[in-house]
Length: 149
Ligand code: RTP
Ligand code: MG
Image (cartoon, helix red, strand yellow):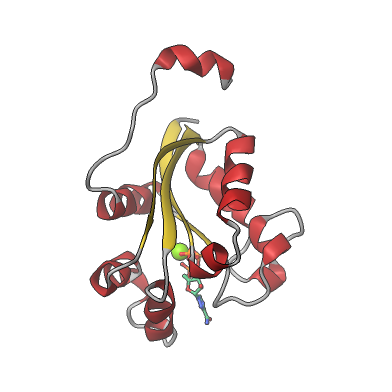
């Protein structure tokens, strides 16, 4: 167990449906802290780098065009086992197979529009945080941590 940072993003479908607050609420309620956040349009080059592992997949073009189609809400969340905890709250990649109670299970229907992204490993988290937040993250004064425990 270790305190980790993870990169999470509300995708264009989630932003357009007004779900930024709902998604963020679930992560905050769980105990993860927001250490960086911004609403932004995604340059094509950033989308291609972010999803580079899927470059050869048949859905790659569709995925890049979707993620660049309108603003996303990008954030870095911090907490104990933040990477796997965020993925658990999100649910499975395909919302049709995601359990009720998860973000994708409660709000999604199709795999192409699954509302939220979260880093899938420590290596991905480090890579994605560097890619999306080259300006860095914000550190909290440790004195307030007692209220978040
Ligand atoms: P993400 O990276 O977006 O957090 O999603 P994930 O780890 O759960 O899933 P991943 O395998 O990394 O796939 C990335 C995104 O590509 C889209 N996808 N479409 N048409 C398809 O068969 C298909 N498969 C994946 C999804 O939007 C998925 O989130
Ligand atoms: Mg992924």
